[in-house]
Each structure stands twice: as structure tokens, then as C-alpha cells.
Length: 240
Image (cartoon, rainbow, N blue to C red; front, side, top):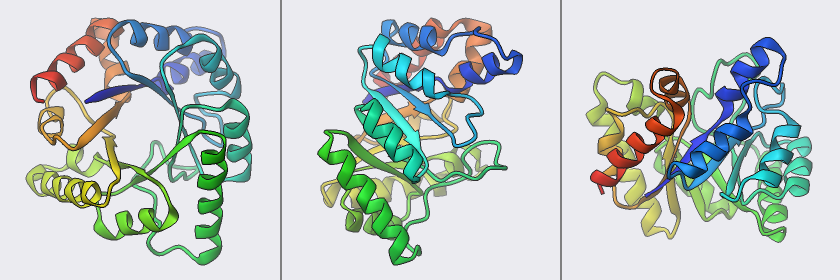
């Protein structure tokens, strides 16, 4: 199972002072040296953490694949085509939300929006950029993702991570993974995962990649970034 490290909140801390420290590029390099398989960065429309310059610097300074999370907009498509990350993950985005609140709603959107997302997928694929859709573990959403032409989905694990009854949510993720895999989709997952709740997700053999950020960046205040990434890597590997 691949482990992608989301470095957004290194940039959040940097931006709190409007300075250059801590540097998210340094965090990406530490992740690279600590066993990570990829770097994830969400370039939000309001630029609340990761900046355009960060994306450029990541492409210039790291060798790990870059997963660019972005909203489905013309602006973000232009940035993606210029930056050429290895993968784009299309995510929902609300200006007032603290963090991503759920998966992308694609089963009930109108034909114009579907056509636009499909166009993003096609243009990225022509530039050798893989595209995934960040969606809830729901069969209807997966079917809609297939109709849009992606070959990768990332399942939102937030409900599982936050639910006191996470057995139900875990089963939703398992069933969604089985369904998607049988439809020849590659399955990734992420959101809210930590040292305790990642165990059961890591046991789902058909999930190929986890993307984890906030918990690891927060925990690194106490243990150091290298230590927490290595610990997460060890837990995931032990459950495979």
C-alpha cells in the first residue's frame, strides 16, 4: 500500500505568520526520505495554505509523484496543465469550510457540470496526468465516476474516522472498494486517518494508496515528521 503525505498544513503554519517558515518543500523532502511514496498538496481557490509557487517548487525539488488536489474550475485546470503533476485529484471545495467536508457529488449534477469534469479528465490524460475523483464510499458515486471516464477514485474516509460506530462506515468502504475494483478502478482512500483507525483500512487489500496529512503534521509537533511518517508506514505495512 502506497502512502501519500499531504503537506497542506505545513503551509498553514507558515502562512499564519506570513513568512517563509516552516517550508512545505522541506517537509516533502523529509517525507521522501522517510518512506513516503508520494506528496499530496491541495491548491485551494482561496490559497489558504498551499500556494502556486509551492506547486512549482514541489515539481522542481522532489522526485516523488505529486498528487495535486484541486476544485473542478478552469483556473485549476490551467494550473494543472502547466505544472504537470503526476496526478490530479478533483475534490469538492466550499469557501467557508474548515476542511473538505465530504466527497465530490457527481451522481446528481447536471449535464453541463458532468461535461466540464469529463473535459478536465480528458485534457489531463492527454498531458499524461492521471485523474482521480475524491468521492464518498457510495455505489452511485462510483458508477458516476466510471461514466466520467476516470480509472482512479479516492474514497473519503472522514465518516469512518469520525463515527462512533465505525463498523458500519468500515463496511461501506469495504463494499465500495470491492465494487470499484470489480469495475477495474484503482482505489485510494484518505481523510481523518490516524495511528489507531488506519489499521482496519490498511487491511483492505484492494486499496492501493492512502493519503494522510493533518494528523501526521499535527503529531510531528511532538514526535518529529520523520518519526511519525515511519511509524505510520510501519502500521500500514503490518496490516497488509
